[in-house]
Image 1 (cartoon, helix red, strand yellow):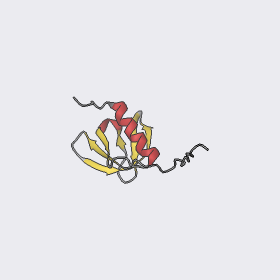
Image 2: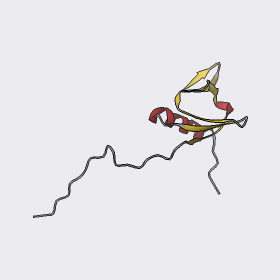
Image 3: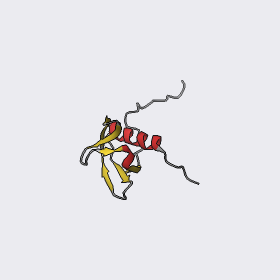
Image 4: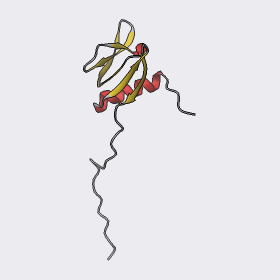
Length: 88
């Protein structure tokens, strides 16, 4: 049994896209889908909307699901190398 997505999961994924500048694949309620990067999430006319880099302002309620367009790269970039010396 898989995890069911709720609105909190969708918002988390959109916020991650904005912070990390990673593209996401957005599936809309009407069946359309696209890949883009989130610029920010705003409140407009009393409802939450998503500002995408290359697509129109989209109401959060129009989004069915969101997924990463590519899996995150697991690297050691940014981690300091630790030198372990033999005793003596």
